[in-house]
Image 1 (cartoon, rainbow, N blue to C red):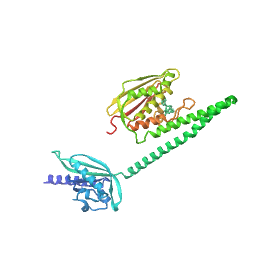
Image 2 (cartoon, protein in one colour):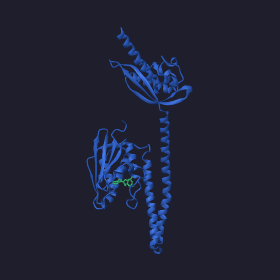
Image 3 (cartoon, protein in one colour):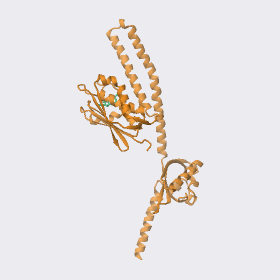
Image 4 (cartoon, rainbow, N blue to C red):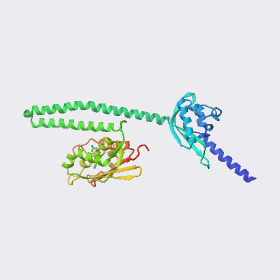
Length: 369
Ligand code: ADP
């Protein structure tokens, strides 16, 4: 008899604990029968809507206050409960009604529970308040679009006066060639060179800001062919600097073609730019299959990078050298990072000062998965 009593006490204790957790969690949680009747809802969910349990328990879930924000919301919930009743786990973001008809967004899911015959006997609806995340995300997207528009407009507007500067400097040089002394010619050279560098900076900034535009399409790309194109476009510097580019077998990938072309172009031009002066640059490009990703590598025998700088070089405008040593803008690797992230991958470098560098990046094979 005492055994049964003990057992009963233990069961009651567990039930009390379970109820405590069930009602005190910040998450909205309940139980549904497979036909969508709400059999339980925790205090958080009920209080959020300013209700009493009797207002909702025993009712069809889609008829309860939370979902009366629109007919579409109710119909969507009903359809999703039908899917969950067939055994599917359903998750989506949805706006619901709270007390005094205030609205908020929740991450909502319907989790089917199965009996030993593998039939759904109950569904757990669960919601988490994510309005803050949704607002921050919206704000971030709008700020990003604003910034992108700003960069594009500013870049376009800056190019025009810049063209005028170089054009008239060239005219000055041609027309007054005979009457200019060395100093004057040097000044003109500096002015034209400055305009050329600024134009490059603007082009690179434009490239950087355009990467995340939405109209990009993912397509099947033969990466070997793409690298041949890149090599072809860099033919002059490859010949000039006596560069050896070794490309091993490369896969077909699903990616944004223009972006991947910029990515390889930036990495290869860097390998050439940061090569050692006394040996011919050797660049090796390879790829390995890493389950869900393709992992590419671009390695060189150049000047290398100190370990402490391995992360900061991917930040916008960060450079390790002065313009006199190596010309550049500090935008190239930041652009590479943005491109790789657009393909749900990562980019990093393995290098030691004086021992060459290997840049690795991954590209997700199935972007939608
Ligand atoms: P930029 O080349 O215009 O300075 P990047 O963003 O392409 O800008 O590169 C950032 C910095 O990373 C460079 O200034 C350089 O110091 C270092 N770097 C990039 N690629 C290499 C490389 N292959 N070898 C050595 N250093 C490199």
